[in-house]
Amino acid sequence: MRWADEISREEWEKIDFVINKYKSRHGALIPTLKEVQDICGYLPKNVQHRIADGLHLPSSQVFGVISFYAFFTTVPRGKHIIRVCMGTACYVRGSKEILDTLRRELGVDVGGITKDRKFSLEAVRCVGACGLAPVVVVGQDTHGMVTPGRAVQILGDYK
Image (cartoon, rainbow, N blue to C red; front, top):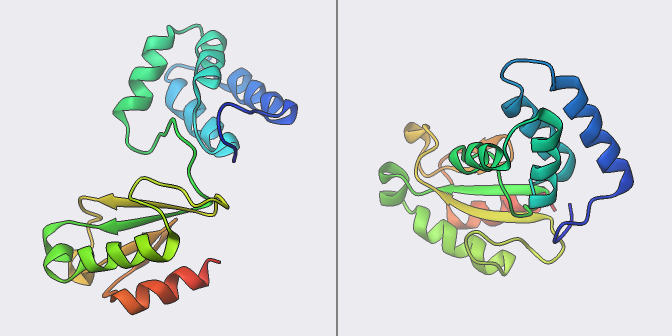
């Protein structure tokens, strides 16, 4: 993953491959965006325009889909995305303290990315695991009944 809109020639080739794979299929936009985001780590403007051109769609439609779905991003994210649940069950069981601890440990604010681009920190409304509150999700891994100390240990597992 990079900052700004730096896409390598190899990545452009992969992007074009994905576009060509889907361009004649109905409903191609979302799977194309998903695969391209997996390649780049995010969907910068120049990539959005390339997808729009390749799928013969207006750029506004591509941006509309990206901005509607929370799993698409137009900003770089870290290799490991840390999501701290701030839903009611998690909040009353200490998720704010967990979030504050992770902010200090990582040296970033919510929505930020570490300088080494290893971690992004997000606060989310609910992850649907209220029985495990408070919950921290790292990538696809869900960690329940987390304490601030345990959050630091979890972070260490991904370093």
